[in-house]
Length: 115
Length: 113
Image (tube, rainbow over all chains, first blue to last red; front, side, top):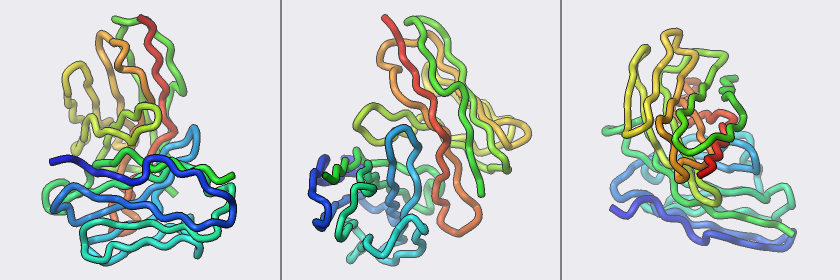
């Protein structure tokens, strides 16, 4: 088991550009979560999937953000028309509802810098 | 909403010292998780607690689930330089069905060799 992976690890973009991040969860984990972490803060929940269904979105997830998990495996998070306030670490986590419904396993994150 | 406050905010200790930190909530949690985060990396799960009063160890780490269910404690014995990082407590939000995690404010630990 290779753990949760995220790509890219770092992304620098200019304001107004679109960016897309990818997360590959631990295999056979049916729940996948996205969090955002700004400097000096703990991660904050953005959205989560159970299999391919997106079941909850935080109010932090403006309409410029969209997430998908088309086949219930990997997920993508897209940010359109990026703003400087979007600069943060974007973290993905996964777990298996039956085995450990509360313990979430995080990937290394994608650090986004919007200039 | 649920909030988690951690103290101390930061700690600067000598290698070999023991460390204690805590996490308090304004509301009851039924599960407590402790994570460690290294710079530029994602949080790594250290310990999970599921029952009030429970004491659980993972090597030199020991965590306790407070009796009131509104707090949790993490102790690190005989600290070493690789213990450096930010320690977060977290608990699932029971307001919805997601079990999304609410994270604390973090405790920064620095260990001087």
